[in-house]
Amino acid sequence: MRVGVIGFGNMGSAMAEGISRKIGKENVIVFDRDPERLRVARDSGFPVASDTSFLVRESDLLLLAVKPKDVRGVLETVREEIGNRIILSVAAGVSRGFLMEHSGTNRVVRLMPNINAFVGRAVIAVAWGEGVSEEERRRVEDILSGCGTLYPLPEELFDAFTALAGSGPAFVLSFIEALALAGLREGLPYGEALKIAVETVLGTAELLKASGLPPVEWMVRVASPGGTTVEGIKVLEERGFRGAVMECVAKTSEKARGLKV
Ligand SMILES: NC(=O)c1ccc[n+]([C@@H]2O[C@H](COP(=O)([O-])OP(=O)(O)OC[C@H]3O[C@@H](n4cnc5c(N)ncnc54)[C@H](OP(=O)(O)O)[C@@H]3O)[C@@H](O)[C@H]2O)c1
Image 1 (tube, helix red, strand yellow):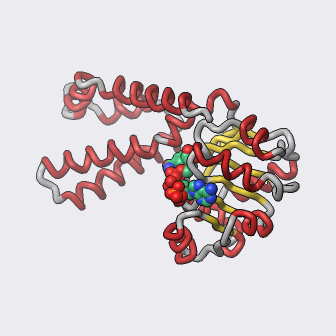
Image 2: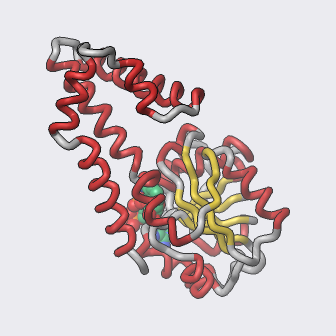
């Protein structure tokens, strides 16, 4: 199985890394119209194609990782040559209907991954096109498992997922950066504070995942009655931390809904 990646930007490169964990870099061929991105792909060990036609001919499966506004152009370019190949798209706001209409095939898969695909830890929403058989689904699932965990999702929930998981790493990074700065303010060297913040977030996420308990159960185990932690939580509540996060995701979701091409 050879996968052709069109667009080697932030997400294309993350997905290429993830997929290569399953099938090897030699089977992930890349095309990007930006020669600099193509050079980065070559330097990272991926075979590169000189144009989209060559890429399609050399691939069994196509992964579109261009901006939503560029999807139509790419589909129209590959339409004649697509044949029986399956098209995967990670573009926000681009429906299966749009992919089918402009590619002329119902062998399409809509995905919403996140940047954590770089380390094989993405969460990836997936909506299958009708033309993809059960056996092909299993093959595609296996290849994508190198990028992270798949979540089959009705298409009407993709905008919510885009906000929560697609953009989510940026929000979590913002929180980690804030923790590190807070550590610096309290007198820790920034590098140390950042390491401590990352490990604290990672460990807390692992604890939550392993226990299956809701966050509040652990919060009250950290915050002893009348103790120090609850003083900090009070500040977060006063400053509307949870409301701010909810509003942040709502605005992002609203923007994703408005992206429709
Ligand atoms: N970044 C994320 O964390 C994230 C998360 C979830 C989903 N996504 C989705 O992933 C897609 C890509 O986002 P990104 O952040 O990776 O964008 P990006 O960094 O701009 O990468 C897109 C790349 O595709 C190239 N490109 C555009 N049209 C092309 C064409 N016709 N043929 C070949 N290459 C072409 C672009 O070149 P130019 O620069 O010359 O245009 C650019 O190098 C988007 O649809 C987005 O919704 C991204």
